[in-house]
Image 1 (tube, rainbow, N blue to C red):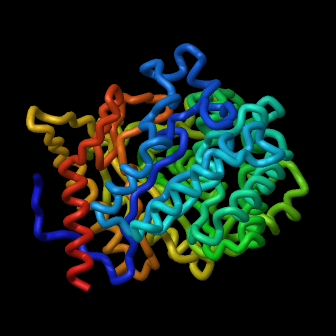
Image 2: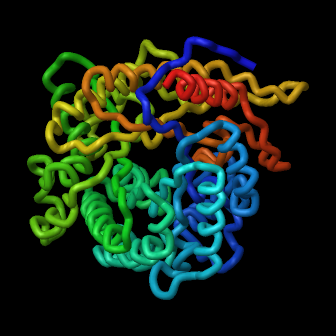
Length: 447
């Protein structure tokens, strides 16, 4: 087991957490009244998932949640970010709530609180009820209204025990991968025709903020995927392409929430009434969640219909996903956001940050994942540097607690602090798990 004494130290009150998502860990896809989601449908289509798998069983967290919470308690986590499966609560995406679905999250939340772990609940981490997709999905404005009704149901049930709430996880990924490029569910390839999805997801966020607060929620935020955008060269055409990408990936979702306006030129692509909707979308937040993995390098377009071309970031080590490891990118992103949204940015949580390394247990059941330890160490230090620069960062939730179903990559990429044998479902804490526990303990001892 790796034992480092020179741990990153974060300020008093800083929260250390871990994150998961319902479809990626829960399993029990056909139990207790859960309805089908777009990911159930997508996974059933040949060729969609690299290893032909699905989240039907995943990590079986639905039945093994107590074991997983015990792992969190041994880690010493302050918080756990999980998502609620909309199809488990409303199998058709509307109407009467499914009591057995609500009961599961009651059990999970109560177990977390019993172990001194603060729940952070995400309402939508991509598992849209298939019935709503059949009616247009996020291209249909009515889906935002259904989402507000769903938010009322779960807020009414759980706001007395869940402190932090996130309505929508990474709406930019939903729009881009799900509706523009088709690499994620529901697999549509609308290209720039997917822009109305952004507006409806933002409207759903805003309506859910109001619904959750009406239900008694005390802390409501968001979780947006942000990436520093680097032009491929110093040339004007690459700089212009990088600006276009940054507007579409970063600012299209941050500006309406924080400024109450779309980036210049993009508002004309949005279905109305835009001004009225922006008043809802821009409801003040209690925190802003940043999901960070890597910078993006962008060049001039190559004629595929998009105003940019994403190219490889070179000169850095890469994870097993092929993503460059650039901790300074997280620091720079946080500092940039604090300046760009000065006076508008609420306290920040890193709601996801992690790496895929496919280390397996050795004959002694040890999982030696030194690269993940190095990743976490350096990214936590980057957060500390951002705080020293004046950014109000309150916590870091690593992705992920356990190895899980990694969307279109199936079970071929491992992000967890805990190794999962997907045949036996045996959990084995990795060296990074033990390091993370030691780091948390060292931070508490130093306060």
